[in-house]
Length: 155
Image (tube, rainbow, N blue to C red; front, side, top):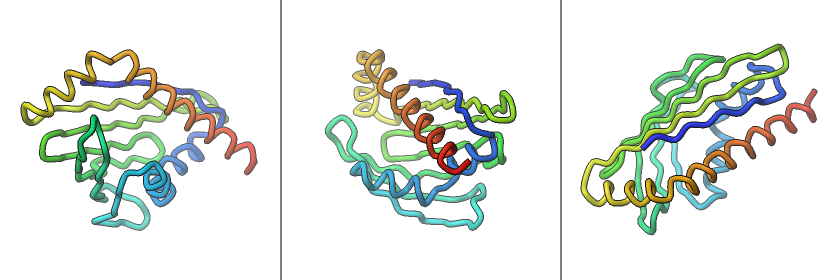
């Protein structure tokens, strides 16, 4: 199952990429939302090869994923790969400078099932695809707006 969305942000590409790759802030945000995340392999500054152990509720079940930063190409792209017992995921974040002060962020998230129970879970997501896609797009739009406001405060 694939989800895609894109948002235009009124901020320069370097600022947007720096915010999207501020993994400490993103980890805090994830923890506030009730998921668990722990950095397993760290690189300072951020680089491909970083690994996190994550745990979260999805469709009434606790899911665990090991997330690896596979590609890190500032300021254009990041790719994350998540591997769990029953699910795998791939998240690609691409940035394009539309002008000096405007950036387009495109996100593509692909989930794949490894066993029957995960297939059933993905099937239920497919049945509710409209709602799930809308929530995904709204969350990305909300984060984009937050980045714009952060840029305006700092500019």
